[in-house]
Length: 219
Image (tube, rainbow, N blue to C red):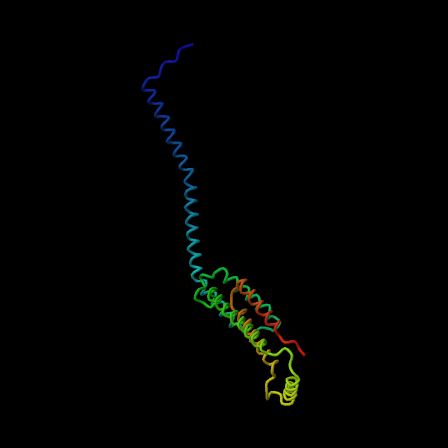
């Protein structure tokens, strides 16, 4: 076999140039392949930024939009009585969800969750004070009325039946006033928008139960 002739320096240089050209060509092909990916990434980033800007703008206007919708609700006019309870329940539930989701954006409005939390605390304080005052007043009353007290109560009852509206109803009227005040406080508590904290719901329930337990038994 004929021995392979050694490559000249000129041939070696030519081969090196060919290899370098192939490497450059491979790089160009790789760069071209990456271009769509880079463009896609840039497009996704731009869309993400645009979405964030839109979301930020929506959050800035959410309080105004919610108040606008509530105004429309208040001006909607009367509906058939059979639909009132269901509509009111749905409206309250939606309002509670909005307050839970956008509490920060609702600061300074009548839906402000922190302000309404403080209002609920004040209402519970009033209710608990009513219970405490009732306990004190009942403590001062004798457990077993004397014959003279019973005779006086009978005379007052007969007079009340004869001249209805001229005088008070004694202990019964006093108790009714307590119950009515407690009910008004509870109604104010429940009408405030947003979901009440569990702690306040427990205090409300306990105060109402304690007041009910103090009601004098019918003779």
